[in-house]
Image (cartoon, rainbow, N blue to C red; front, side, top):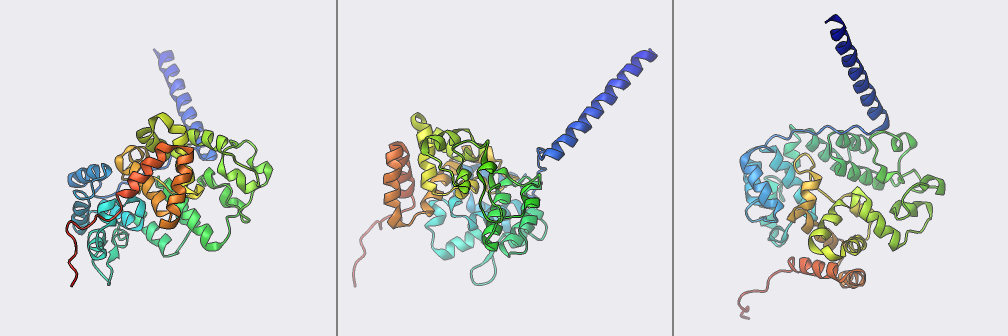
Length: 340
């Protein structure tokens, strides 16, 4: 009996030691998972119902409910509306085509001449909102990105780093670049924004940041990289839904439509603490936001040329994009205007 208890105690001690060592290893290597943040109001039944509708692409039956909930101090609604207000890719045709005054009324809190972004209200109680406001007001940079990362907001962390690098006109010092939380996808944002050939050894030959070392990236390798990297989650989901038979070419075509590696890095869920990246990418809203992101990155003058280049890579993708773009064209009047 005594020996059995002793053996069990030894096994328990061994398990505890292994757990400690594993936790230590994850902490030292930066592989530990980020802790999410509970956002007040995210469990509200009305919010959950409206969120499901919004993810289906239904602005008409979701945005007004978010607005009402935001006025009723629902923090999740305030944060979501604030980010939609700031990001055209998440605005469907109903919002995009509204008169300015109506759009302000739906997306913003009362105040000033053009309303106030709801994030300023949510920042009274929510740390994620506080960091967004600080970032927009240029009251921090790397520190904000680190906090976003710790709160499970990887997309927001990348955006904070990109905004900070643009503001300061340079990348980051080695202590930042080698920090456990710092994203590998932005390893090229050095002080000089350049890497040596040695720095990119081991990277996939299609990885776009190889260009920072002066190395070419051809479309064959880029296509292969896009099929493998988690960074292309949103492109992969869009192509799986819209161009099933040409998914690899579709992803390449969409990437060229974005015309930017950085645009790829800031695609995704408005807030991973409200909508997981996987859920958002596979939703109608997530898929539509890929096309919308491409649309807003091109002027009317450059859009036709982009579509021709896209069709050269994959005609299915070009047809889908053209159809999505058409949804944002104002409808013709139902009756002709009678001149005075």
